[in-house]
Length: 429
Image (cartoon, rainbow, N blue to C red; front, side, top):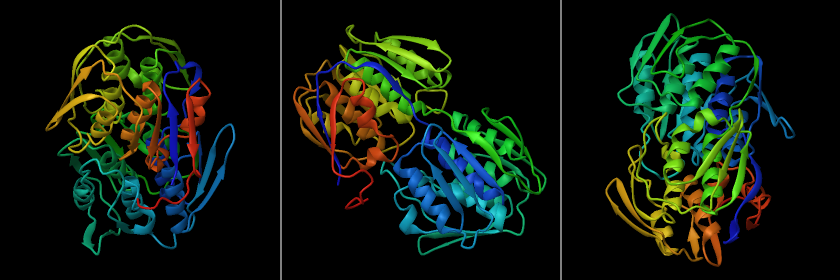
């Protein structure tokens, strides 16, 4: 099992580039199920979750061709879907497996999908997917850990989400594009990843209005065609690198990002005293070195402060002067990084959905355990400023969503190396 060894103390300087968004690429790959034609996706990140999705689509009969290089192309042909089943042994490490449910039912009239796995950060109930598909006319049963959905053809309907859900919005959007008639979706997620998926679907011939707002209207069509689409930059990776520059007191340009997707993160970092400048349509410069000030955050759905940046921000808060209150409103079990940060010397107290961080703390190197994707990123950030050499174990969590993070950080001055083989089978996932 891979480990990262990080020696802290080096300010980061230079330019670091952001990969394509894993959370955009996964639904866009699932969208290829909706057509017999080939779908080509550019800017696909080479991370573990993408490899899992590739295996999933291939197991259903799809042809998936990866072409690493400048464009990081992936071409998916779902002309034949001989086995519309998302098998547990493939999807057990990835919650995004639920994204194939809607497109499979819409395209083939049948889907059998294992209940999703992934990071243990709390409930991401699939009941909103089920409720929506049933409203569209699907019959859904559950047994032996699988959901089975059937429908001759889905019907357009009026969907109001009980709570905002990104994957639920994406899954039912894909189902709606081939449904008969009009589907009106309300209380939708507004994340850039939803808009990115809608852009691909539109290029494939779907009729969608309102993506990126809380109300989406879809006119169903009888078929879709192939398309070529470039995946959005990963806003969470970009935010992680902004904090890396800030916490190390460096001078870092985060390139190939979309500053428009980083508004809440940039605003909060400026509140802590970090100097941040948007220097172009796809680059942000962060300069540390000034004394960090404590500032509270409260995670919210987009465009609020993202839950996927909470752990990274907490690492920064350990080095800020004063008391920061970190409130987690999206997932109920997303403070698993706290105990590891405390082992490194952080002063953090958790009370329910809130954590109080007192700083600045003198962080010291330690052997720590990665518990989920973003918790892993927070430990990397803490290790970059800790006194001594830290060892991060179980970094396969990190590999699910960050592409070659140790190479990127080493390129801007971090002392970081990997021990083990990238993508080697984990002992227990």
